[in-house]
Length: 208
Image (cartoon, rainbow, N blue to C red):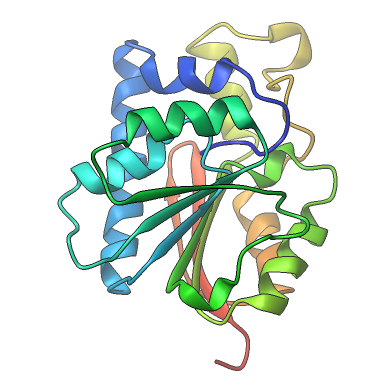
């Protein structure tokens, strides 16, 4: 659940927040995510927009063992440096790169994760097209489920009330139905999960 644009400490704060509601909802998110990953019996994993490595660390902690390496791609050097430090004792490789022009051959991976990234991008369809044209395996995408996400920020966390709960770094806002419609333009959808307040989609290349 990380961004590929300018590094921000708000990402670290989200995962290290000790609010009981925050820890429970993030725990449920990772439970849903790791079950989806395990269901496709992954080989090597590519986490696009890996940020500081929180997602990959939780995957290893989940007990999934039937995969090779986790690669983490991000455009921010500082975030990748933090990820390498956090994951130093795990099978992790950091890759500096841009989601719009991926610098690594995707055929070495079995599954791509793109978690909490697309809502930050000015051109999300360009990113989806880039992945769909060069990758033939499984993908998992996740984004905040609107308007539930905004309501949670306003009511529970009292954040950005004047902006109706919108995170200042989010430029795209999708409901579950609208996001699944977007993904179906580029991929064949296998499963859609609502893990409050997020939407998680498991999909694969059309025609696979």
